[in-house]
Amino acid sequence: MSIKEEKAALRREIKQRIRALSKEDIKSQSISACKLAAGLIAFKNARTILSYRALPGECDPAELVKAAASMGKNVAYPVCGENGGLELYIPADEGCFVKGAYGIAEPDRERSGRIMIDQIDLIIVPGLAFGRDLYRLGRGGGYYDRLLNGAAAFKLGLALKEQITERVPRETWDAKMDAVACEFGIYC
Image 1: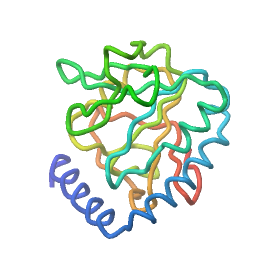
Image 2: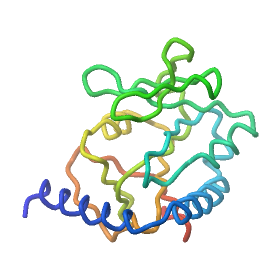
Image 3: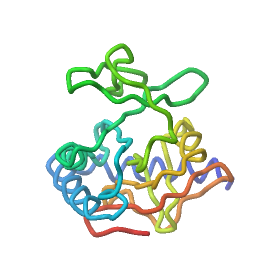
């Protein structure tokens, strides 16, 4: 089986596991993962954080974003740009989000401030699966791998326990996390 086939099979398996969860399960696990992540030195020391808006079935970083805001941190979000890249914006307020590519809520470019990847201290990374070896499996577009491979920031995967697997099939461009938080603890 090729790596591409292994990835496709793991994506199917993880999506099936997530479909079995209730919204309450996802919310509860998300809150637990965020509380653990908020205890990381990398989070405490970060001035500017890149987060994401959760899709249905994803570990939701909302509680971690609230904690960051209460500590006076800047929180940026990605916007799908041209050529398969992500542009980073800090929204002026919660009302600045619009439906973007793939139905993901993203900051309105007109009402948000653009920043560059080297201004980010910590990246909260979504994923479909995370291996105990700290590699992630995304949805297949490569957006995050392209961003993460050029980033010096601390890379924090946020996961539901159903998304944790022993290992993730990977290719040379797949980015490694510095840590992964789920309700059971932090892998690093």
